[in-house]
Structure formats: structure tokens, C-alpha cells
Image (tube, rainbow over all chains, first blue to last red; front, side, top):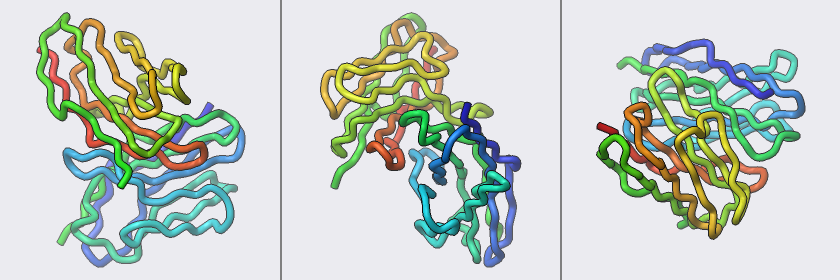
Length: 114
Length: 111
């Protein structure tokens, strides 16, 4: 079965500092991996995805994520955090051999302090 | 631009009433999903559909039903609303190998 873990409920970072939001996954086959962001009272917005190819993927708003197969991780990163990045972040995985369904992590709340 | 919409955005109902939440997408996606989001539980899958006339149960399907009569719509029905179904409901759609696109959500309160 597929599963996703986001080990930190909350991440605090000062504006201008780099940020990392962690995600680890478990699938039986090859994974599709995704990051989403949710602002208050809004739906989830797609940030980036890893399907195949380069392990470092770049997405919206300056975010990037690194796929590490040996560590089964897909951490979200940004070199310089903005206060406006404060939101709830979800990692999701889809097992390529298991149909179209996603499994979402529990979410990590990012707070960027001015 | 293609989009996914949900209606109503807010709904208050009473225990025992039937409620239907609408989801409409113009992406022409085959796959559509309903989730509920609750504090401490993240997103939980209620039902999903891979195409017209196809529906499947997710992890929290009890008390909910869906039907898929066309590509664009996947309405979610609560047959007899319960207070435990107070939640925020999100609809999503996706192409075969692509990310899911989410609607803005419906906040449902069952009194």
C-alpha cells in the first residue's frame, strides 16, 4: 500500500532564510510525487511534481524538490523564504502500478516570520 | 481557462436531511475525486470515478454516494446527514498521468 509521511507538523523559518519541508513515501512500484500548497479557506494548489528524469524538480513560486530514491524522500525546498509562503503544504504520492489515486500526507504548516 | 468549480461554497443543514454537493470541471478529465478535510486527518478520499458510469469507494465512503453521468460532473450526496459529516469537502480531477486539480471547497455544517 502507498503511504506518505510528513514528519513535521509545523516548520518555522525566518524570512530570507532557506526552508525545507520534509516528505517520505512508501510505494510498491515507481512513484509519482507531488507537492501542493493550501492557503486559508482555499483549495489545494499544485506546486510541482516528479514523474521521471532529473531528481531535482522546479515548480511554482521558486519552490523546488529533490527526489531521493534510496531514502524514499521528496523534500520541498526554497532558497529564500517569504512571509507570503506561510501556508499548509501537502506531499502526495501515486503508485504508477496502482491506478489513478493519490495518497496525501497529513500536511505541514509553514510559518515564515518577518 | 479550464477550471473546477464547487457549489455551494457554504451549506448549513440539519441532521437527517439529504444534501448534494456539486462538482463541475471543464478540463475534460476522466478522473474525478471527492475528499473531506478535517483537522488532524488531512485529506481523506470519499469516492472517485475514472470515467462516465464508473464510481468507486474511497477510505471514508460510508454515508456518501456519487454518480457519474457525464465527464464534467461528479455530485456527492449525503443520504442522511450526520454531525460527523461536518467538514470541508474538496473535489478534484486529473488526467491519466497528471496532477490533480482541486476545486475551492464546500464548507458543510450539519446541525
